[in-house]
Length: 245
Image (tube, rainbow, N blue to C red; front, top):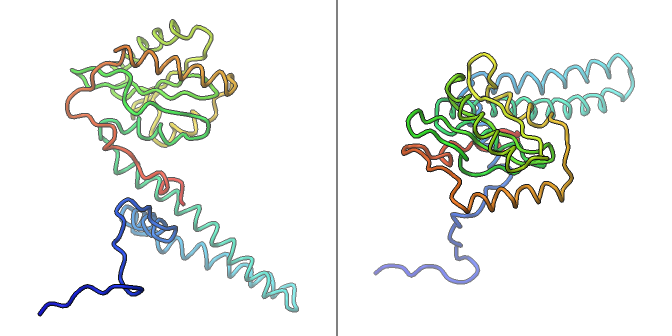
């Protein structure tokens, strides 16, 4: 005779698959991602925490009195902060390594530039033969176009898109960058810092007007079809891991 499931207060609630992981679960994911890519991660983190804790202890002993307790605690807290910073950097490097070579990888990296930027989920231009791509993000600096592909080949597609945007938005700055490993191109690590350093030229109302204008054009069939085998959604990095939180 089979036992009936427990009812009442002691009945287990089914797990929600859409529920986001908690802070500790997120940190564990970040650590696992970093340790998988860099085997020295646990030793480097331990060295950061223990090293600053020891420095705090030594400073306190030199000063004398009960100061050693406070300086040791301070050193430990600073070590934790340094470890969190290092873990974020390690996770970013690991995320980039996982995406390296995947179609749409540079678009996924551009999408992490969240400070005042909104990126189109799909490429705005794609060459079906070469599979070169152009991604777009809009923000206070204007319009940012980022190509993905060999330098000489993707430059033509990028220049074409720049002319089209300057014709559509004559008073809006249009910034163009090439993503790749060749000389003159931005690596994945350089994309977000480069974009965030761009001077702000538009206010919020102007940014909204630009986005609405581009969205309206997108609904009129101006967006080219994406080549088969390219799905930018599959190249999305773990944003929390790349930020170390």
